[in-house]
Length: 343
Image (tube, rainbow, N blue to C red):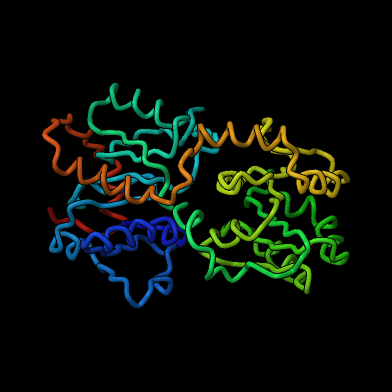
């Protein structure tokens, strides 16, 4: 498990559980200073260096990030760190489909990304594509018994999430409205922000904490998603994970509002929009279902099994793929970042 961000722990742990259940071995490598080793569990094993990875000789390496050095042994499997949010790179192309020449296998989440990656696989010839669903979501459809955020509170639960971008974030724009909601007690509020959110707004929302509002900092958002009836969000891709449950999302100034979302642009309409979403209107629910069938049609909690099956098929395949591009500049930068100069 090759990770560089704290949120990657939750992304890969369902896959780890499946590997262990099938009698395999798992070890973790933590790249850079943005991933904290304190989130490793006592039962999880860390490899401290590139040399230790080479000595262990993994069959496959699972990566929720965008790149991995070519000198890391094993087949490189991309499992993605989120859904396609439509973010454009500096060349004006969707970053989700940027082929960087690092991976042997892309495990896609649903039809609306699979087809594009299959077209790219034919074009480049050095990787395979398998639609598996996203392992991260397996716990979403499994047992809720240990969820600490489930409550006997009879009030509707609203989960408020926000991206960190100053231009897109609802945190500063809807602060007064959310403060009012926290004081009125009409709903039970759970608030969770992107880990890169400005500390100023983290502090301000933490200060709103009371019996009606709980501010949560976590590396695992799945229990929060399970616990809420409706989400209030902006353009953060976490809203897609919430929609997979077939639950409504109210967005504020979403950059790509479509009919599966209840998007508003006037902050004075937030309360009315949430009230409407809580009725689960049929047309909206039908639009959410149609959207989910394209985004992530799997609700069986078995995406990890499919990823592992696709990986094993790759390991035992006789198909000859083209050599990946050398990427000399990128590989030099990775060697420098990891301070690794051996072969």
